[in-house]
Image (cartoon, rainbow, N blue to C red; front, side):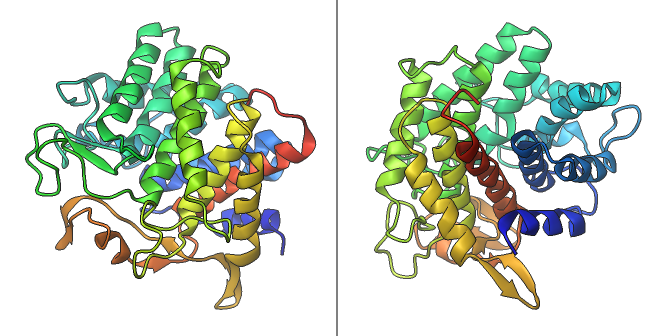
Length: 365
């Protein structure tokens, strides 16, 4: 089975991650399906996207299980497919649904510096995950509605978060506590202790997607593209001989540190898209990572091909009785699973970029 057939079978049998409620885990698959359709033009990807997402979007644009008062930035991610579906179908419900998500952002709690809280449950905290979940959507919604201030706010939040979470290695720490109240936060910097690969993967995808959305307004010489290039260069420095990246990104020699599939897929996508955007010559490393994932991580498990070695979930602070301290050792305690959407969706995205690199010369997109 080649990877496209794997993606097709995965989407065919996919069950909504949270019982049908609107969530970012489904959004990872929706984003992958959208990009595969854009890259290949094959109807099967759009058919899967419509079947899965339409089950969650009512005729009036109401999103199943979505409560804006949760102030959960994760819930915004799946909304990125709404713009594409609106363009493809002409149905008003998709932009109406996008308006519901934008309404949350209009009143979402912020730190004093202007960054969205990660969730109501995580007050005054900025996580790298959330930059990908909310800011590319905000930029595209602002562009669609001619709201330049909305676009500028998202770019400012992204640049501000980079400054708050940066390390001296050119990488970024998972989280930041604006008020220094969390036990995992450094009392001086507010940063969490370690560099988690998937957190940096979310950030890398956010950066290349934002540069693409700005479409020429962020050239290779502008600050945002420069920071994107610097991050991708730092990511390449951490790439293992296998083509993949370790779970704790800045500690490859840490006992028990393993090469993790979801972050590796995210970096493969970001590197290939970065090359297409003209940010830098990153395609060889991105292609090598993609091939390594397809060749070594798509394995038969219980009679079915699955994407293996995915960190199930990781976070900061107490949750479900677990002490999520954000230390290097903590990230090695979380469960490792197969076929989780947080890995498969980014591998789909990387597959779309791989297809485009094989079809055309580098370009914006």
